Image (cartoon, rainbow, N blue to C red; front, side, top):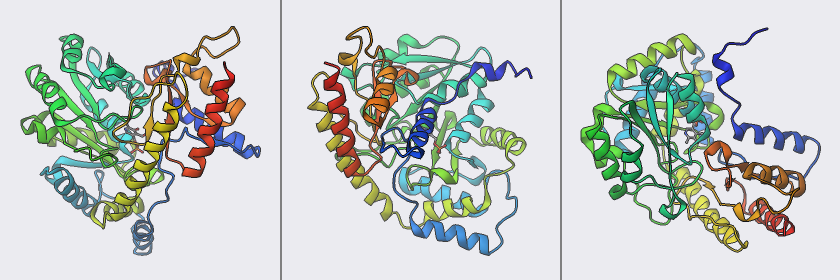
Length: 395
Ligand code: PLP
């Protein structure tokens, strides 16, 4: 059967491929340490599960309004006010099947052939394929480890073309863990204003920041950009709810309406019990988030220290999320048989050391690997021992 031309333009996500390989090895009884996963290792907190169970018992098993139940929209609005100081109306928010779906709808609603969208690299793998599916072109802006992998105003200005319609900001970032401070956002947002760009603010890791980092929202720094900003977020990472598939968007009513029309023809609505769980997560007590973030911070320190002790591995200190993105160039191209790219090195690590990491190519940096520390301290210790030993074996 011939497939559409559209589907030939994209590829499966690199992170999912690693997860699949890790699952297959585990099924064969291999003692694998998995640093590939892009999700918290914690379980969804019990009160959130109970909220879903209660919703099911109360018969919330039917279609809901396309953009989400009134209860979920109310919870989203109160979250945006509480955590970000942002005021939105219900016509300005939409719940979708995960942050990924929210971004997909946003790109479909806003961009098309001839449009370019600025994507600072290293980037989350899916931005590229989702933009391509919308017919738009990613305008990739490379950043430097020396700048902490942060895009500067000079980088952005050099990259802009008359076709650029938007920029994507993901702070803290997957894969680098980098987060922008207010004074770093301001000059970027001034350029956004001057060039009439749209901002896609991907906030899915916003709560995971460490070392006293002061989280500042794009719209706190430049509130006047509200009419040209889409705030995308999700309950996946913050509440360890990746499998529930609830994300949301806040933005101008006209864009939300267009996204809602698309969603109505794609999924009708996100799953109704998952919406009840997400409403509880967003509006209920937030202490589980604080506890989870504290553990991630402790793990981040451990991982950075262990990587720093491996000769030749360079790893900028992350400010947030649950990833590090070390440069492993020192271990590449050492001999005819040895790994040539971070992806080869990832394949070597999973085969020779039974540790799953993701190669950097699909994040835009082939001589890096991404390590997720969403794993227990016990596994982090075991996994880093294995990585250390396997790299030293390369000579
Ligand atoms: N944005 C970034 C940067 C991510 O890393 C992810 C998930 O890995 C998402 C968005 C989407 O997450 P979800 O669809 O689970 O809400």
